[in-house]
Image 1 (cartoon, rainbow, N blue to C red):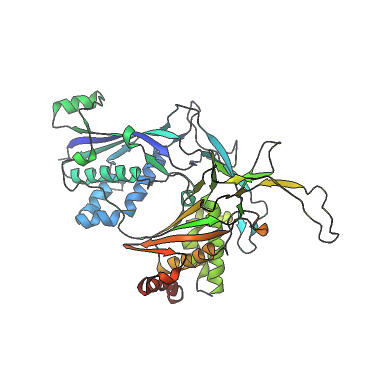
Image 2: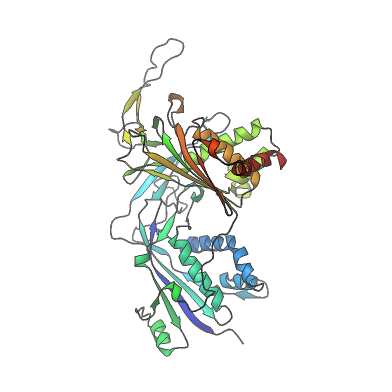
Length: 458
């Protein structure tokens, strides 16, 4: 006899973008990669993208599920659904598309990007590209429905709490370029409601059939009646660095204006804040990591860098594309804390010493007028290896000592930072590094050195 549906759990509310989002449509009318729009011209996030991300996060938590009961492996499979030659199972989770909350017009911007030649440290020829993003703070309505029966009730309730927890804490990232900080979302708790319909009660059956979402069915997740219905969380597998730096002089991550009266290049902005995109940080860190790995003459340098940062071969994109394990958050810099100044520059003919004709250009970098204006960089490696953590620590040393610059116009001293403090954490360990590392205990020094030694051992 087939399992009889025992009830439904619904999570209904509003999601807010913590960073810009790019969910590509495959079209290139306004940019090289446009976002998706619905029939009335508003951006939206397809349910397939949303569910796909949730499933990926659950895969990362698979070991946590398996600790509870051996048979949870099959329940995990049944929950997400499957199709096999002789058998199939419909998923227990349903989601509608995330529709744009049109209380104000959608803010759509085009971002520029370039590919850097890691050997030369300059842009590759014909490598400029652009893409559309939905600006941060945009809001979307979402609706998730979970169906449970007697055999999977506990699993579904744990899953409901886990989904809620992942969304509340901002662990979910949707769309493209998530490893460089885009696509980060979080639910608005005060505008999100959980409903439970118990089909053993006629009233709940009637409410469900008439789609009556009354406060009578609204609950807090902590009210789910089973002790096991607690959210799961990542217990290990992450190496994290949060470092606080101050800008020594100036910085520019170029944004190319489409307005004739604007400077040729300005510092990239998101809403009213200046922004350092994760892609700029990632590019600089990747280039320095590769240089360090080759200087140390490590074995399998290409494999180490590809596993950590990913790789896209333009000739065989679909066959060889690899997503990296490192995730770098986008950094928002308050407009009031940093000052933009227009600077005019020229190019000099090195042979004659004169100005090259037509080579006048201007840019608008930002400066930090106060030494207290701190930039915080967050880097995380998922399912890290010790050698990867060691390589990242060596890159961090260069960044904090001012030997690794970020952004453009490095040749005139821009993008140089000075380290203030760093928090390094992995599994259940945490070490805080201050400017004076001599105060660090010998035990903590040994733990960090073990990561670096692993570069030669593996």
